[in-house]
Image (tube, rainbow, N blue to C red; front, side, top):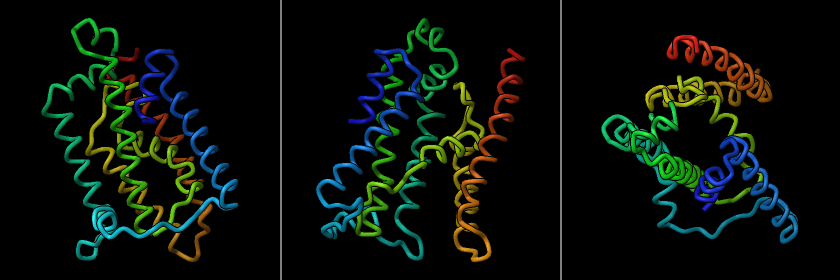
Length: 221
């Protein structure tokens, strides 16, 4: 529902998608934390165990969590959609130049709303994996993950202006961030706070490189 809401509001208002999603994120997080404290005086609570849900979202495959399989599955599906389907071409065309895409018969508004809903679905799956793995739900968990997601996409070569990027690049960006996060949080000699420093520096550097890449692709426009 959040994905559909963001997509429709972005389409109707014409406001930047980033602003709409950021505003919705703040509203949902604030409301969830507020109601949690009002009802239970805490932002986290244990959940009633569901073996079927745990099998789907938090079971083990050998030494690996099933969340890894979810990630690989979504990456393969998205790679196939972008590279092998008409809808994938529509996505690139919409990101590159909406008006030109619309003039060529691409259902730009429908594509954007579908992408909002797809993003919300991925976030829901990620949240379900965390909830059933820890047997608890925390309204404050996942804070600032949206900034990490942006940094991962940019590091993976996705243009912030749209129209260029690959699933392989984003996947490599995610792996890079995952390795650094593990190094920072599991090496006792390193303060975990420095992970935020890393994210900020990488995001800033990636934006400059991203802008340079955009100019090369567009011929300096």
